[in-house]
Each structure stands twice: as C-alpha cells, then as structure tokens.
Length: 120
Image (cartoon, rainbow, N blue to C red):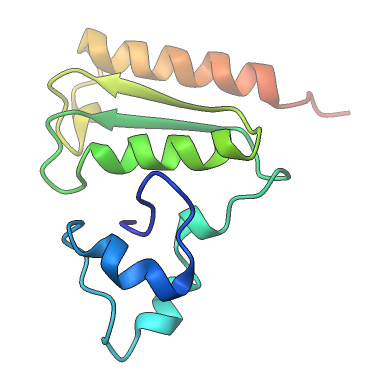
C-alpha cells in the first residue's frame, strides 16, 4: 500500500511522503499505472464497511499498513476496523484450533452479519 501517510497526499507531494515507506514508486516506469490501483486512493463515502484481520508479527505485510487502511475509510465516514491477531504471522489462520484464529473468525462473522442483507 504505502501510498497513505496519515493524510491525503496530492500527487505532486507523493514522492516525498513515500520516502520513509520502503515503497519505491516515483521515477519507476510503472509508477503512474500502479498509483491508480492504490487502495487508499480508491476510498470514498460509498465504500463498503471494511474489516481487516492482521497479525502484528506479520513479516510479509507491515502491520502499520492495516492501520493506514483503517484510517482512510474512517476519514470518509465509512466504518473500518482492524482485528489484531496478537503474535500472528501473515498466515495466522493456519491453525484453526488457535483461540486467536477463532476470535478473528468470530469477529468476521459478527461484522458480516451486521453489514450483509439476507437473500430475498
């Protein structure tokens, strides 16, 4: 993700804002193409409520990315929550018997139950 720094960043300031994110984008031939797909740039008041499940020991995707992705919908008045799996790695759900996995799935069922309408 890396395209959000806690505030909306105009394209002309993006390179400086990304400097500390570890994402090399500015100057890359695909920068304009990739920028269009940044999920943080695609949030609007019409976006769906968002639940993110993220282990805080994830070494593939920094946990901070979920915190950033939670903030963007909230700025637009859209519900966004992060369920933190304490000590969870990227694939925290491999052990279905782990209580933290069960808690993440319970929250998912509760969240979907509040936001999905029954079929007619």
